Image (cartoon, rainbow, N blue to C red; front, side, top):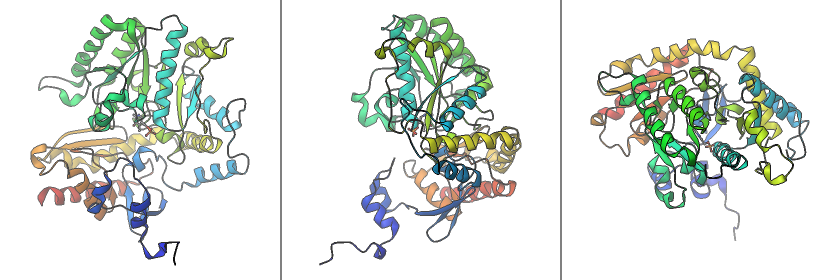
Length: 449
Ligand SMILES: *Cc1c(COP(=O)(O)O)cnc(C)c1O
C-alpha cells in the first residue's frame, strides 16, 4: 500500500493546484488559465521550470526594485544571517533596524523621524489608522474616529485596511464586516473634461474634501490617500496639486494625513517619496513592497515627533500597544538597507529619469493606437486603457492578455482594461524596447481574434 504520493509523477503546477490556495484568484479559472512554476530569477528575468525566460514587467507585484537574485542584496542578507536571523523588537533592538530607521528619517529630512514596523502593507495601514485614532483619544478628542478615503483607493485587505479601500471586487463579500467611512471623489486625471486640466480635477476633488471637513471634522481622525497614483485602482493618476490642497485642509481642520506609499514609494514615482512631488510631509507615511527590494516581507509606518510625543507617557495603556511577531526582522531590514545603499551609490533616482524616458519611448506606439486611450506615466509606472469598445469580453480580457504575454516572454497583469508596466529599475534600454514590442504584439493578438 502506497501512503506517500509519488510527487515526481505529477508536475509542480498540478501539485500546486491541489495543495496551494493561490491569492487573488478564482482557482477554477486555472482549468483554462495558466499557472506558471518559476524555478529561478536573475535581474528582471524569471525562468520557468522549462527554462523559458519571462521579463518581469510588474516587478513581481510591485515589490522588486533591483532585479531578482541581486548580488548586493543577497550578500547583505547572507551576512546578516550569520549574525542574527530574528529577535523580538519589544525590549530588544539590533543594528539593521536602527540604521534603517535613521536612514528613513534622514530621507524624510527629519520630518518623519519615528518608524514603527510590521511585515505586510495592510498591517502598516492598520497601524496608521490605530495610531491616528489613539492620538486623538490621548488629546481628549475621542469623538475623532472616522476615516476618510478616496473613491477607487486601495490600502490592503485586512478588515481595517479594507474598510478604507474602495475597489468593489475586494470589498463585495465583506462589506457587512467593515466600519463606516467617508468616501470622497478620486482626483483621477482621466476625469478631466475637454477644457479641463488635471489640476482642475484636483481642485474640484479637494473642494469636496473641504466641504466634508468643514461639516464633520470633529468626527474625523484621518484621511488616507495613495499619493499621485491609485495603483490597484487601475493606475489612476492625479496632480500633486491634490496633495498640496489636502495637506492644507488637514492642517486647517486638524485631520491627520496618511500617505500610503506602499506602492508609489521607494523611487517608483520619480522621487524617493511621492509626497516630495507636492513638497509636503504627511502625519503618517507607510512603506512596504519595494522597501526590502522585493526580498522579504517588511512594512513600516513613519510618523512625526508630535504624534510620537503624545504617546510618550507614564501609563502603559497610553503607549502604542501594537505588535507583530516578525516586527523589525533583521534579515528584512538588512535587505532594505542594501536597497537604500544601492539608491545612494548608484544614483538610482537620477538615473531613473532617463529610464522613465526610455519607458515612454518604448510605449510611444500606444499613444497613437486608436484602440487605446488615457496613456499616462508617473516615473517608473506607465499605463494606458484599452477602449471598452475594442474589447470583446472584459471579464476575461486581463487573463487573455496575461496568457498571451507569457507567449511573448513578458509577465504582465492587466487590471480591467488597463495595461500597465512597473518594471524593476535594472532594465537595459534594449530590454525596455523589447518589453514595449512584446506587449504590443500580445495585445494585437488578443484584440484581433
Ligand atoms: C499592496 C498595497 C497595500 C497592501 O500591502 P500588502 O503587503 O499586500 O498587504 C496597501 N496599500 C497600497 C497602496 C498597496 O499597493
